[in-house]
Length: 175
Picture (cartoon, rainbow, N blue to C red):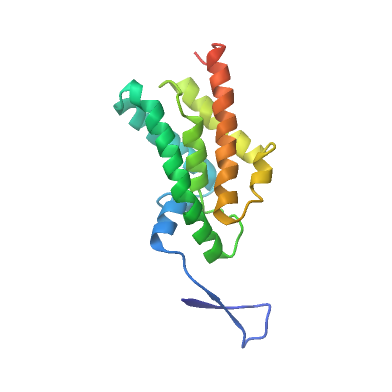
C-alpha cells in the first residue's frame, strides 16, 4: 500500500491508495501501449488492427469470424475488471492509459471483415470516429460504473463501425 500526501488537506492528512495488480496494469494498458503519446487510444486501435491483420492472414477464412467474436468477448471480459482496478488505483473515472476498451471495440469493428486493406482501414477510421464522437447510446454507456462504463462505450462504438463497414461492403463501396 502506498501513501500519498493530500495537497488540499493539512500536512498531517494522507490518502491511502492501493496499487493496481500487475495483471490489471498489463491488460488495461494493452502491454504498455496505453502509455504511448499522443492519442493512446488511437495507438491501441492501430496495433489491434495490425495484429488482427497478421492473425487473420494465418487463420483459415472459415475460422476468422468465430475467432474474432470469441476474442472480442474475451478482451471485454478481461478488460472490465482490469479497467476497474486501474480506475480505482488512479482515482480517475476513465484513465487515459486504459486502452483495452479500444482493443475490444476495434476487434468488434473487424469481425467478418474481408482480409483487404480498404475494409481494414475503414474499420479503423470508423471505430476511432465513433469512439471520439460518441453518438447515442455510446456516450450514455460511459455513465455505467467503473470498468463497465470504460469498456462498454467502446464496445458500442465498435458495433457502430461494424454495422457501417458491413453496409459499405454490402453495397460494394469497399472493393
